[in-house]
View (cartoon, rainbow, N blue to C red):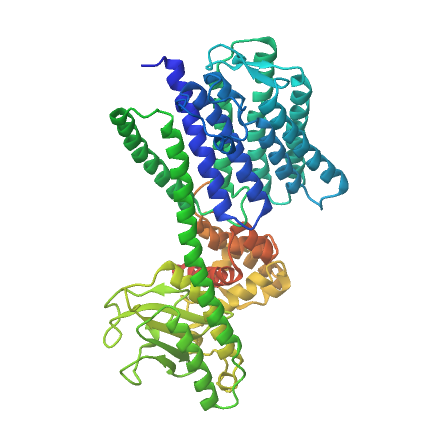
Length: 614
């Protein structure tokens, strides 16, 4: 049984090795098109090499009877006589200089502006210094050389003649990396970007402390435990993982936290299983204990690649289907007759349904006085009467088996087609061929094509000749109900939001006549502008009711905040839609659906509050 320091050092380095290798693969496989992701992954794997050095020095591999020449190809960073030079020689292996050069390159790419000549010179010089340090360390004793002693302490590595020069250069590049991150955080225009840079800055500072500690120990012979260096690097890797999971740092787009934690947990469980099996093999067949380290490296690598390959295959199929259905829908022209409209939309709808393997599908048009079926896919029952209330939805919704009566008992998905605040039509899909409900990926596949179908229906002359466009049975009912005290039209609320700071316009709005406005009016409020200010206060205070009863949202912002933030940022803060979409990490289609649903919710709230006043 080893000493407590030995066991602690092995656990810390083993954990750091696994975390660095896995995080490198996670960043690379989730964001493979970004140069920053590639450089970050290489940097993390370089840091993993430092952990590997220490582990091999503490539990060195057995020396084979005959050392083949090709073995040097697998150990390019270690000295030539590493297999016969004793355990401490393993500490001279993977150099930290490569990780520093790579991370400096990453931080330069994060700076605003293009790569100018000065930045390129610093990047290339950093790689040249790293290459020189690696060669000198592997082939000479001028940088660092191992000495007899306990590998649990940093002073086992003795400083060579060129050590001060290389140490100064590496410290300089660490300082430049810190400066780059600090500048990026200062110039970032979005809070989440500043948080990303600050997290990475803290991680760099913590890792940077290893340099002066190494200098003190190697140059001055101070017996500093190796676990201190490993622990600081582990904290740095953990902070980078925290930044990736919570702030999507180093990633292109948004990190799905559930994917991050699921991947991390699955890797941990796999490592535990393989480690236990390896320990059993070591004890039975008397294999060297260091084999476990290489098993873990291979396990993380193979499972990460398999997971990424599976996800890539699914996305490839998804994108191919989405491209095909978009192409079919974009080929639709404006029909000149009802027959041409029916032929065009049925052709497009067949592609729509086949993409998710629906058992059947139907499109119902919402006209002024009726619900009319205008397209179908594999529907065996002919024309069918449906109730309007069954087809009105604010957003896509799943239908439980048996929720609708015959012949729709196997309906599984309902997709409303909107133009503005008016629901033009509804798509009703039967269950998928091989399931009861549609998967989330299937729903996402249909969102944009459904918007294209809505545009086609809206622009067609058949709908243009309706009386009028988008006027539905519900609209007719709303007209008769508009004078009642429990109803506020969605169009009126949307108009008020769009003109939120035009008090004169708000004063002329029908909302100004609601009893809800009265508490916001003083005795001196006699003009229409005064009424407009009261409407403004009513809308803003009502909007606050959509705010989740929580503290300020964390980044990335949870979904329950989206409805409130879309309306608040778009109308109260008057921010650009693209900035809101970037802040929430949502597409334009999702943004429009969220805003439409939130406006309808706000209108319903106003109606309910109005009806509660006696």
